[in-house]
Image (cartoon, rainbow, N blue to C red; front, side, top):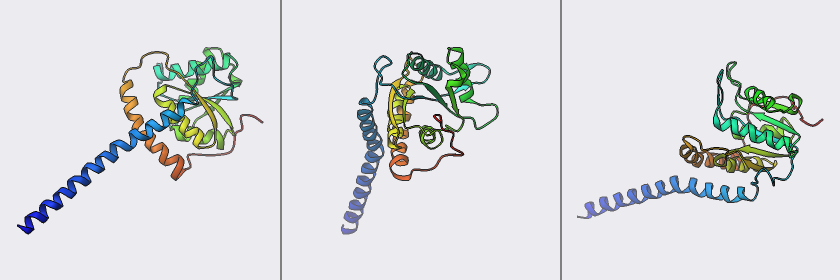
Length: 219
């Protein structure tokens, strides 16, 4: 009787621990996402009311060599170009993945921006922006930026602002949502885990991305 009661009590403890662990695993990412969303609202603007900054940082989002930019990336570039053309920024920093010779996001972004009317001399490329954290870290460490307008879609803008401002950049954001996107629900769900990782990196571990010699945008 005593042994059975002890065993039952132990099972209940394991069950409670499992429930609490699951609640933490699910609840913490949701809570952090809500916090980042609330903070981001104070620094999110539309094209016609965004305060000017020196540079717009445009985050990579995939393209198909020989075919063009993804819909998400096309809209990011177009929004950055609009900021440049209305005088809200003086330069565009294209940051993306270029880990292999046959995949060069920043170069593809630059080509599209030039097609839309931006002079090549006002476009700066960051070939090592493999992640949002890397792009924001390198914006200050390599390109010596102190302020920026971040250009990306709403699902990603919260995390980008959290990261940039947490790393010391005076950043505001403009959403680049110009259409409905396929798999947008998946993007929002992915951000739950990604935002948790962002908090860990920005406020606890501060890992160093790929760096190199400083390349200040402004002499």
